[in-house]
Image 1 (cartoon, helix red, strand yellow):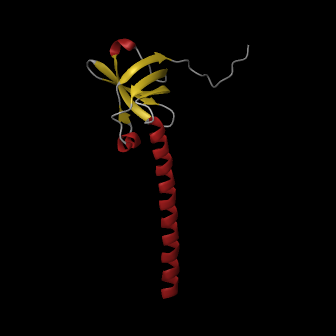
Image 2: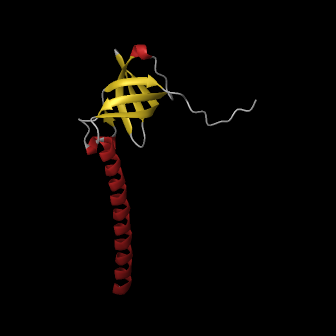
Length: 124
């Protein structure tokens, strides 16, 4: 009976250690990605518009960049649509690792509309 309980606790310990190891590897990869983002004060990336949250005077846009998601505010006059691609430039000085993991809010310094990549091949 005691040996069986020790075997169960040993298995659960190995499983817990394995999960902890996977979690630490995931955090390490995220941290390396964060450090890559923070190399420069000004970062440029291509981002896809995931969602638009309309406000009275502006729109808050959720964007997906290369491996991270972030939020930015845009004027309503910009006429940005969901699933648009934007080339954006933003300031990285106020981004912490914790906010990077959550999805950070940043000020866009410059943006231009990008081309949509159609994944469906059209034959003529």
